Length: 157
Image (tube, helix red, strand yellow):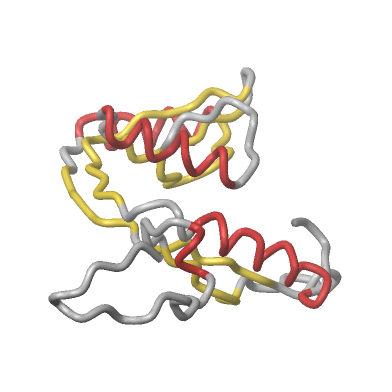
């Protein structure tokens, strides 16, 4: 939600909350680095996430709940839009660097910053947990209309 005041985005964020609580936490594993080409002039270096059926399904659920339709490679960006001359100096270091790490994602952090301020920094606004619960658990439980039954008694209602 680009260039929106906080009070305008709150209903949408609450809707995200209802949808994201359906997604369970997931453990991701990073194995090395890779890069994207942005035309002939720029590159982006990223940490490569190991794909498994579980992680593929998790990212698919996340995209569905956030209503993202475009194709994306799941990654963790290290450095974005590097001019090719600088990339050619950096990439040999990252290419040969061994990095393996596993971590669990249990929430989505929503950030905010002042829209029209020069050099505004991003600040945490809200944590939306991945709880793996169903939507019905958001509603309070209703009391039962049935009367408790004694052990020796049969109830048809």
